[in-house]
Length: 230
Image (cartoon, rainbow, N blue to C red; front, side):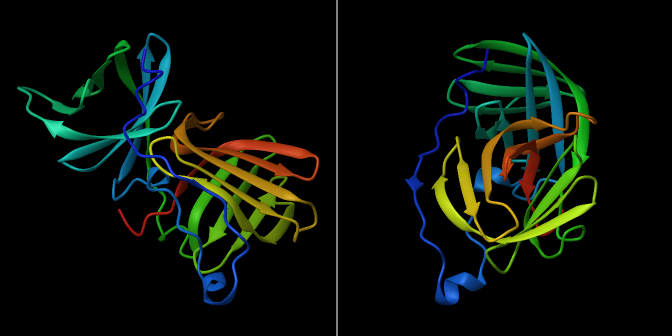
């Protein structure tokens, strides 16, 4: 089991006041664990014992691994065949569509389940973060140049825009960010947590779990920090 493998990053927790002056012209800094950091593809792994993982490889020197609990970056290690990455007692050894993951908590045998191209500015040129979910279909975008968020819900039938503030930020492997606003039609709270996330219809992999509270409704989905390019 890898329940405790997302560790090693120093955590920082802070609360933020509403932006003012020049700060209001820029989007807030988001945790690095929300991004592919140059990786072209997110890969979903189905593992035994039952656990699902997400990975991306920004370059041939490192792999980013998301479990249910957070994100860890592993540097490359020497191996005879395939690609292997290791950090302390945690290792990820990929051979084609198969992988083996070992940690102090045990071993996982994994098979590649699906892949998704990382979301970039080509698809969302004005966004720093993008998320979506189902039932009802919704998506949201955080503007790259302001503290503004646009929510499209009910399969495109409704749209709302918010000026938000950052309520809290936690960096490190268990990164989390909470945004709040009362400027839309209904109060909004957006809770973003680094962790392996899968679209509940397509199964496609994402690195951030998203919970959106909008008035008396609660939406769940997945998201990622928007990359400059692949």
